[in-house]
Image (tube, rainbow, N blue to C red; front, side, top):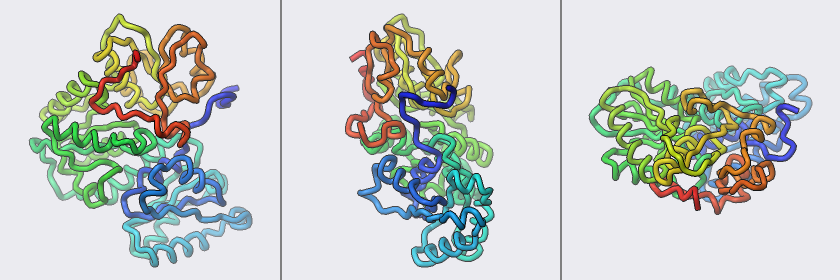
Length: 381
């Protein structure tokens, strides 16, 4: 049956993606649901939960409130909490119940903003899509509300925004710091990281960047907004491996000079080496495929089980959202790099390279998630 996972797990939902993207920015995220979504997010999807403070709440929607559509209670509860806690902003994220009842979250946000004087926005998440859409929606909302528009793009400055950096794709394993170090070592100045290790005030200066580095698909909506508003070009790729990270740095310099976008994550250097299949998010997986080809001669292709755009995948690669779509692409004899929870659907005679994903297996393999920034991939072992 299509859209039914008999064996493998499912990816983190859009509402958790939104909460993850906003976690460090000093705002208040309200998940509008009866119960369950908040605990799923903080216990399985959020590795920062026990080490950093963040205002993430559940609305505790009751059955009667859902049936009668009592938005007044939602507005008054959020207003009271916000006036007491004084967050920088308020984000209201939806789940299946408010989707079914037709709750107008942007309208609720407008009322809350009028009541509190605090910037508020509604996010049309519904737990029916992956974390990528929720995080992308949240980061774009922040860009539209907080990035200062009265500043010019500094094309020759070497300043770079990193877009789409959340623990759901990179975990808390030093990757964020490594990307900053790689940028500095390559002659760039990290301006902001969306959204790990940067404050809301730092994000507000994003318009000054010479170029944007998109490290996962959820950074693309913000990249498009910054392109539209400031003319800032973007480059999609993660500095995995040794040779690919060098190529990515060169493309960032070229984009800053020419103003042209680039997606090196979609390029597959020719190789006659061992065949490999990499399963995962398009920008990260595509970058790993290119890095493995350049560093180790591995001929890799990507199976993308998540939302993406055609320009972020190589020719012949498509979205494969369902278990029944994925299985035929895992061919006998290939090396398969994927989260360990994919292993049961892989051919028994294929070598398996465990590549845990916080967004797929949660905290189960968290300690094994590698930091591959500017390091050899070792995909062949």
